[in-house]
Image (cartoon, rainbow, N blue to C red; front, top):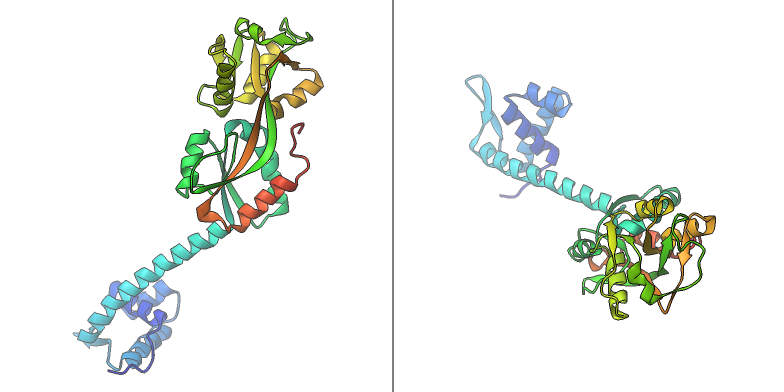
Length: 305
């Protein structure tokens, strides 16, 4: 059989609605068109296939044998069309969306300003951000569940690309109530004599700090408290009598304002790099490229910010 033309999706939708709702009037209401328009679309299907789709049976409109087959086809095609629309909508949104993940310390200090600056510069884009530990972020990057990350340690995975973002250093600091406030340099042998409030053991800060101390022969220090927020530790130091080891970017403002004191330790420098990491599955994302450009070009994002 030669078809006069291809079936119209609107005609298939009219057939499906007429059958499932029990008549042309009901189909018209469902499709938000007039009854003559539904009838016209049904006749167009008849013309397309060269055989009637529907006929009156006992004063009720029912499907012919050909109509039964086309109705089954219409259901399949329209269901797939709905899935296609959903898929393309997801793709469209995805092109304008960035799934950004950061470690808690970076998130507390940098994220609010970064998000506001990016929103001002690129209102057409949307960022979905979350904070988590580096190892969890690495897993989501590698599996394509995240697009971009700001990390305190470089991930080692073939599906993740990394580039340097900022140079940082972990500093020993205390508040004005501590006996070391305003003193000169101390020795590494003094470190086990102090009382610490630190980030939790599986944080990037602690992993770097513990390794460095272990390398210089100090496998253990007295820890009074572990706190999962760098900002909270800063506040505790300002009112308490503990010391901590925290990122320069998180304490520099407090040091400059005189609410924290940098305790220099002879023979101890804990330098590190902050990293931009992105998934290989999202290399050509315009949103990711715009965000990376903001990170690298924004002269406000330095250690003293």
